[in-house]
Image (tube, rainbow, N blue to C red; front, side, top):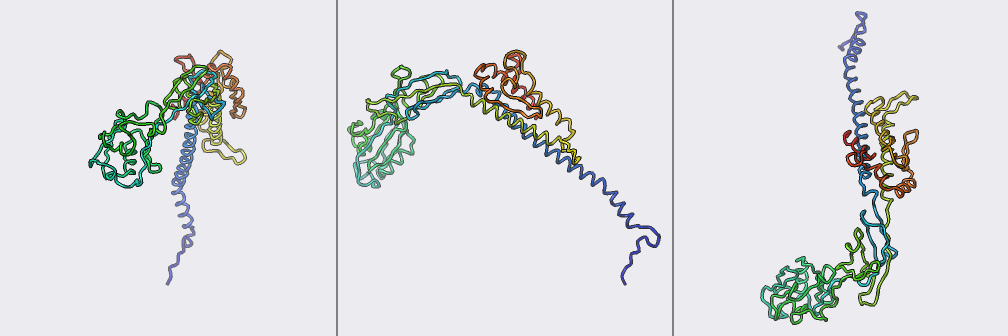
Length: 400
């Protein structure tokens, strides 16, 4: 016989409805708590995103604090097949006439041709079980069981400033660095432990303890250039970094033939590079707009839907927006032609969107570089006021 539930019918009371309402009433704090947790998670996520955008903004500000951002120099060559150049921030704006008379070359030694590069050298002479050759003070042990290929590998493994290879069954030694100072000299930085019937003599790298013209298929040489009529400027490499302060000239190794009959010419101009500063300012403007646009979206109230964004009414978010706008719109200093961001092409419209006139900025930077730079980089201790980048970086650093 099945059970029959009469509920409250017998008493005239709907007990199931009452119980359901009591359960809902008891669960209401739980629902409220879950809603509160959800809102807190949304708020937390929003501030995490704000923090990320402010962190990127601070990175952009860091670039604007550096004087190197504005003092950059560019070096242009009229003939890059002859010479290229780089200029540091401290270099003078000037033109340089560069004539290349010779380029730096490595030394190359070629030994005797052998029939079998894999055969042990014991068959070539009366060698000890172990022999020693020294290259640039690196002692290299050569066994009588070693082949020409083994010897080449051992020289390379020694990292002695020499590259070994086998070309048409000849052992070829080539200095790793160009210039006369890096050349191998028999008895000095190229030594065979057995001077009478040594490994290097047998391989043809030495002849009678010397490097002959037949062995030295290419001599080590220095590069030589003239700059603005100054002659006799040399370098062991094809790079000249000390001839002109702040400017490095890189000579193309194929610029001239090293037979003393040829020269090559190029003109190098060093000028201000405003492009680096322009890019840095544009990057700041873009990131500022990104951060402010995100904050606007998170503090918005939609009147049509009557819905508030997650940070709508948040006093911290509102103070943050106001302070960022104040930092970029307030006067940096009281005197001078350039004392606000607006004066150098950075403006805020009525909607709070920042724009950048790069032409106006470049013109100002060329007209009065120190004054423009100070708008961003000035320090109160030395200048009596703080530049915008210094102020904002300090604020963001404390905030984050």
